[in-house]
Image (cartoon, rainbow, N blue to C red; front, side, top):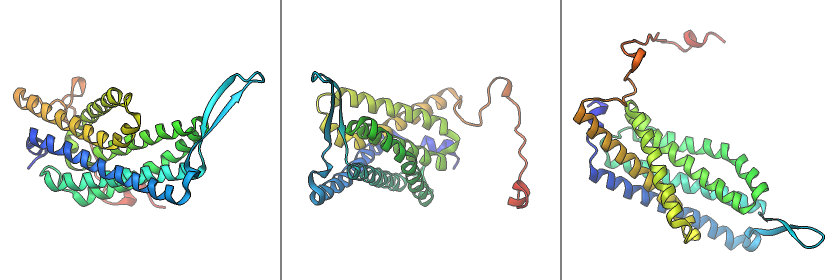
Length: 261
């Protein structure tokens, strides 16, 4: 069965189920984060509470205000967010590859998602440190949101590249739609209850990402099937590139391609 036939197996109920899987996986991640914070709080107590620092003039006028964070607070947040996103992405990948016929390379997907999340953690740690020093607790919260977003985007695209790479452009547009859904939801509901939104951010992000990606794939397949124009196929060529064949020289041995050491 080719990739177009696999994409054609997507139905509206599948999109709904995948959205629920995203929410459920995000809830697991939130539970992991909450458990880590709770256990740490029970051990070290108020050490994790940010302290307020104000810079004033000699007349008492406030020039700046910042919440300083303890190094342990930063470490706990980084570790908690990493474990939460890793657990959520692993569970979502496991469930989706179990219920979706389109996704078959389960072991490969799980491995790449896990490795990618570790790499993202290593890249984002300097960002956490910089924004913590500059903006305090608020900066750490923003870095955590960026961390979650990058992790979810990477995991979503990894699943598509491994199984449906011919239509990776469709998936990329779907990820953009999912991000728009997420940030719109965050803007609409986040102003009224920012504390609650901090705990539902991961479920909402995974759910909206699955919804955006699924709806985009579904609408694209309907359009391509109705008009017979598969214009987002990565092998499709336009303009002066049409009809041009790419010459690829196959290399059978590593030493032939990269030379002797």
